[in-house]
Length: 114
Length: 114
Image (cartoon, rainbow over all chains, first blue to last red):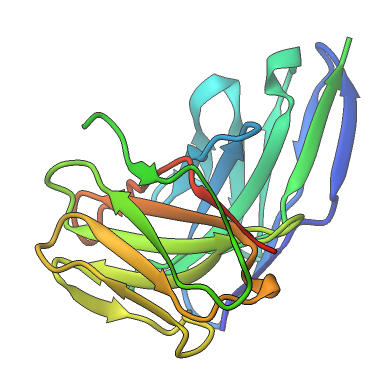
């Protein structure tokens, strides 16, 4: 079975600083990878996904992530964060050819301070 | 509608009672998923519908949980003999079709069992 580890439960940063949210996964077969953002009292919103092709994936709101198969990682990055980026971020995987159910990490709370 | 609608947004029930949670997916989306998100955790998969049938119900925790989607659109998650441990946010997501991986999540139903 696949699993996802988000190494940091909380990440505080200052506005306009760069940020990296780490995600590692475990799976014996090929997977697809996702990052979602959850604002307070809202549902999950897709930031970006890796299905195939270029390992560097660009998403919404200036975020990007890089798939590294050898390190089984899919870290999320943004070069300069805004106060409005404060939210919970979830990494998720699903098996290629499976039922498409997502397996989520426990989340990383990003807090952007002025 | 424009998005995935879940009702009610909040539900408080007494231990032992029966509850129903409703999900109205985006029109035309054939795939529908239920997830449960406990406090401080990532969402956990419960059940996946493709059309009217439950294609994968491996995430339902026990036989107190049941879900239906009789006409291939609206789905209802049913919980019998609720327990305090069932308290969580129940999320619904829909997708246009299999292999699309373009899930849209609703805002969830916050269930509190007292």
